[in-house]
Image (tube, rainbow, N blue to C red; front, top):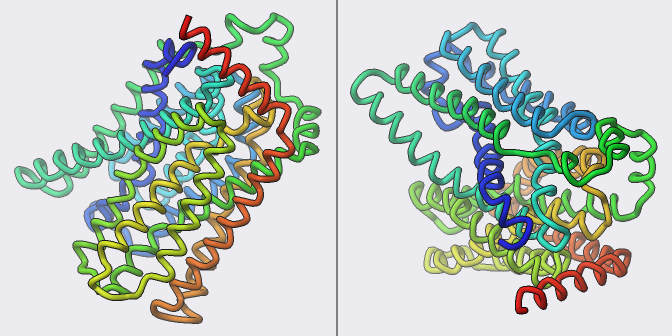
Length: 432
C-alpha cells in the first residue's frame, strides 16, 4: 500500500475485520444448525423464517442505507451498528422464545445493512486516494476473506472444547458470547481509530452539506450512465457469488465426488477469496480498475465454460478443481472491484451513500432471483443437465458483464486518462 492508504493501514484492517464479523451473528446458526434448533426449541420452518426475516429487512435496508450513509457521520454509524449488533447477540444468551428471535434477526437486518454497509463502503473509499481505490477495496475484501478463514477455525475450536467438556448448549453460548464481545470491541476501536475525511480536508460549507442526504444529487446520479453500468456490473458478478454453492452438489452428481471432497470444494472458495481480492487490488491500481474487471469477467467466463464442457468422469476431478479455482478467484476479484470502480465514474466520496443506493438495491437483487432460477432449472431439466443450464445462465451474465465493462471504458475515457496520469506522476515521485 502507498501514500494515503499506507497511513490508514490500521483503520483498513479494523474495517475489514468488522466487515466480516458483523455478519457472524446473523449467519452462525447455519453452521451450528442442529444445535441451534435444539437449544431454541425451533422447527425447521421457524429456523427458515429467521433467515427470511433477516433477508427482508436487509432488502429494505439497502433502500435506505445510502440515505443514512450520507446523512450521518460514518464513524458514528459504524460504531452504533457494531455495538447494537453485539448487544442483540447477548440477548440470545437468554434463549428467548421464537417471536423474540424473529425480532432479533429482523433488527440485525437493519444494524448490519441500513446503518452499516453503505457507511462501510464510504469509509473504505475515504482511506485511499483516487489511484489507490483498487488496493483499498482489494485489501478490504481480502481482509474479510482472511478474517473468515481464521474466525471459523477459532470458533469451531471453541465450540468443540465447550461441547466436549460441558454441553452443546454451553458451547453455543460460548460462540454467541465471543461473537457479541468482538462486535462491541470493534465498535469501540472504530470510534477511536476512524476519522471522517471531512474533518480535515473538506471546507466548512461542504462539511455541513455532506451531512445531509441530497435528493437532487440522487436524481443527478440516476441520470448518469455510469450508475447503471456499475449496477449491471454488480448484478452480473454478484449472481455468481451467491450461486457458487451449486458447484458442490454438481461435483457430487456429475463427477461422483465424495461428501468430504464436495465439502472441501465449498471451503476452497474461502481460500481463493484473499488471493482474488488482494491480486485484483494490486493489479487494478497498476493497470486501471476497469481493466482488472475486464480480466475478471474473462477468467470467470473461461472457468464456467470449462465447468460446463468438462466430461463428468471421476478421472477429471483435478481438472474440475482447476476450473473451480478460476471461478472462485475471479468472482472474488470482481467483488473487490464493485465499489473501487466508482473512482472512474467520477463520484465524490461524500456522495458514496447516494451512489450506492441504486447499486445495492438492484445489484444485490440477484440474491432473490438466482436461487429461484437455479431451482427452476434443476426441477425442469433435472440431474447434471439442470446444473449445466444454470451455469450457462451464469456464463451469459458474465458475457453481459464483459460487454458492460467495454461500454464503461468508453464512457469514462477522460476520467481514466486523468487517473492514469496521476498514477504515472506518483511512480515518478516515488523514484525521485
